[in-house]
Length: 231
Ligand code: NI
Ligand code: MN
Image (cartoon, rainbow, N blue to C red; front, side):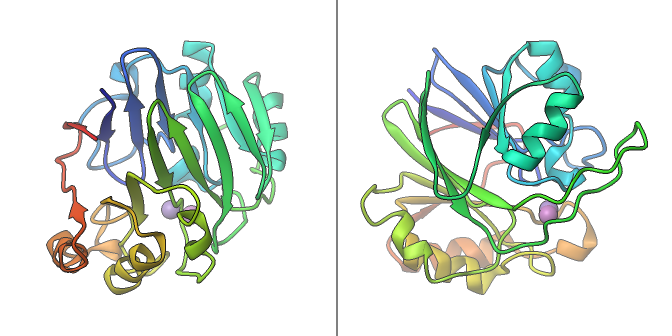
């Protein structure tokens, strides 16, 4: 049984009883997170889509606490390694088999700059990415922060996607219209909207997105932050 938990913003946890992974664990400072970073369950791996602070979030502290490996792009991985974190570097287009399943790095159209960290260092420029994750018997796509792009058609073409986590908040990423269009390209069975309503600048109505997805004959999950949903 594979379960997904959304902690608000783009933070997603996947677990199947054997493995637990976290994606973009922005918990501290996340106004909609339902728990503190100390309350996040132990992870086997953390995946980070890019170096902006609302995605890198609590990665360093949680990775050190859990002695887990962080999957990130090369530039971000080098930075994290210097901070004392175990890393597995990857790059766009590459895939690798991990204990929980295969991960493929997908492109994302977004900014590549890094924010200053609490040590006064600046996260180096790094490519924003998404991840296509085989987790147990399920395939989950986490788009990261991205604009709509037609190559999304390729992502789900050979591998049917069970769950697509898509940013819908507009302003910095796709909005409702483009995210619904993205799922026409991805053809995912279910969608879970992310990167919205964390702050006023990305305030949108997730029900408008759900309506568009259901019109496609697909399902839209609208969990409360912290709610576990079986996929
Ligand atoms: Ni970003
Ligand atoms: Mn973001």
